[in-house]
Image (cartoon, rainbow, N blue to C red; front, top):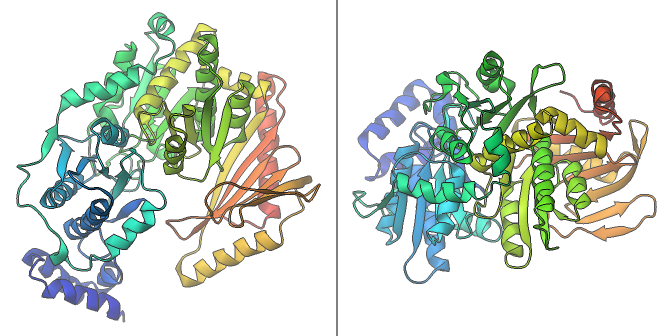
Length: 579
């Protein structure tokens, strides 16, 4: 028989005794205690953690759930930190996606902020994450909040906190905000206005300010005009992308957009894709069906808060396949740098950015144009932080991460699916002008540089013992690293915990100039890279594989891809990774 957890009972009793918690919530608590102890324990055994990226969790009643009380308490903590760092009038902006309760949570966030004396802007209707990031800087705000759980299932919602640069919180703000949030232990500590009367609502006119910046990214307007009938299939996966992606593509000049009808209406229940993540083929299936039906040139998809982009292209046999985030990032970097070179835009101080687990091919492409490529830790907030650090000194062109995030230009300081969709379409038109499909352009990049094949394996090990096992695995890789993998020498090891890279041939050690993180990387003699890190949000250890192999002609792609896959499987076996 399941017993009530003492911590859960103590947390629940605090809510039951509070005059600030409404009767309906208390009735649900009492019912759970009587009829669903397992659910009760999970809902109350801890406080929903405000991590370095904000809140994310299952919606429902409880201290460990996303609800109006936990959102309000987190906001009060965030507000208290902003107050400590800003004198005078404070301004913030809030947006929300299509998830159930997102608008309600956004309104609660706004009411707490205005009750604390802030000038608050809030979007009238759902708008994407990149637009929130843009609005922070455009409106001169001191912070911002996006209500979204990104690509998680429908049961989840979340709260992304942004600083005055338009990027998500990084050190020292991230941990210091957490300290302030943790000090809010009871809802009675929250100041919350009774109405939304003093909040400034942002309407569709603000869209034009954002879209003007998106349109200014265009590099090939004459080519787009010539290929304006390019056939594009698009799915917003029942999310916010529908509000801006069609408008942005039309502004670029693309006139032949076909949207997946079943996924065009914003719907927090995500009826056709329970896991609305463009990284998942199941979520992309209706898009693939439409792309095949209309014989599209490309398929585009955006996740619920429209910061990630999925891309589908025809292979050499005419069958639609899905690109991964590394491939999309490589194509866009190659295209953008080509056009910058053709337009003679380079002044010698330009750069691109990628995360350490993202394909090394992006760095190779950048350097081939004489453009610097910086590495940052995993997470787009570190790309934003790098842009901020180099502001006024060097010129950011573009950057991305393997998990389907990319941005062009510095007016958005987070992943931007709106600008990325437009640039993928424009890149497709540029390829068509050369008589190539987007996939053929990718193959030509591989022939020029090398073929890179990527894969990701995650091992979930739950509970206290699971955390210990993951720690032991990292320790084993750190202190007894492999000397060879798939018959190739390990020539360099980068340890982001000790912040040293060791050349195993010379024994030379080089300092890594990044924040400390529990990540290991093994570089092989052929340029392949294997990265290992525990997840920061889930009980998982993740293995990222990026193996490379020369590709002489497009026609050899299938056989070379098979060899690369065999190499990955050999490495998985040699590292002792079990699915």
